[in-house]
Image 1 (cartoon, rainbow, N blue to C red):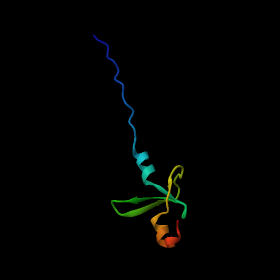
Image 2 (image 1 turned 90 degrees about the horizontal axis):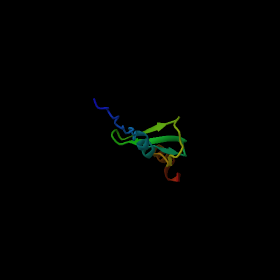
Image 3 (image 1 turned 60 degrees about the vertical axis):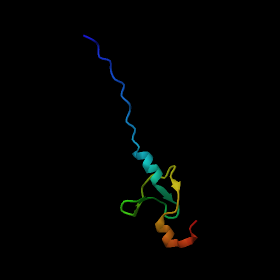
Image 4 (image 1 turned 45 degrees about the vertical axis):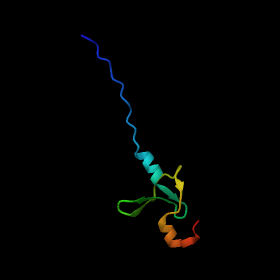
Length: 71
């Protein structure tokens, strides 16, 4: 009988976190994280969401409310 050699298995890499980091932005005007849902054409806001290394961009809701005064 021959000895079975264990097959090296690659770790499954989850790209969901990387996709979320690219899609979710932080609005400094309303202090919430947000993302656009392209399928339903909505804007989703998240109150309790980590803001570390999120792109700082004013959300569409703040742009509509405050107009052109938001930088």
